[in-house]
Amino acid sequence: MSPDKLASEIERIVLAVTDNYASEIGEIQTIIYNKLVGILKDLELDGEGYIRQSAANRAILNDAESAINELLPGESFTNSVSKILEAIPIINTLNADYFTSLSEGFNENRNFIKSLQAQTVTSIESTLLEDGLTAQIKNPLTDILNRNVNMGGKFSGFLEEIRGFVKGNEQVEEGKILSYSRTYLSDTLFNYSRSYQEAMTADLKLDWYVWAGGIQDTSRSICIKYAGQFLHRKEIEKIAEQEWPGKRQGTTKSSIFIFLGGYNCKHSLIPVSKKIVPAEDLARVSS
Image (tube, rainbow, N blue to C red):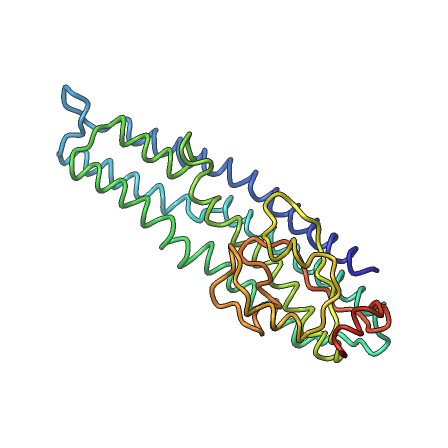
């Protein structure tokens, strides 16, 4: 398997599972919105359409908050997240096949991979199903409910605010759950693959890489600059000292091998045998 083939296959897998996830989350967001509207439509309003401050409305607010806790994470959302995790063994196989073809000395460190995989799964579950979900989605949505009901907000504006947060609107392209989680999942899977590759690179004592991956409209200047180039480890460490639009905070000579161009970067640093590095690149580093 060639470096470009490995990079493209990993990108294909990550994009496929995240696109499927996005479709499912879009449906879940609609379910959440419809459920809330079905509950909140019974709120008592005054003659001008403002929410009354009453015991009955407080009870409806409690029902809406209970619905949020029931649906988030809920079985459908949990299943959508679980499907994302199915990409990890596929990524493992792709990387193992590549390193096997690269070196006879390759021996997958199963303990390391098992630990890396467990760490990644724990991070995803915590971020999307537990603490992160509460902080980024449930608490802000509950705040919208409480603020509007407690302050007697305009009902039509209240529904529009909920719609924008949950489903998106003309100003906000997609709902908060999807916008919060899709990029995170994509980054997590790409970072997982890069961490696997970097660990195996260290074991095999490889120092040369290809900055692999196609150029897209959203590609950062740093990726456009180096895409397709053979680079020595020391050169990549030097690149980390540069500044570019979208550079991820915390990018250092060590973390650049994982973070690469920044958030939502779909490129890869694929380690290669020195035997396939062009003579001019070898001369550049040795000079």
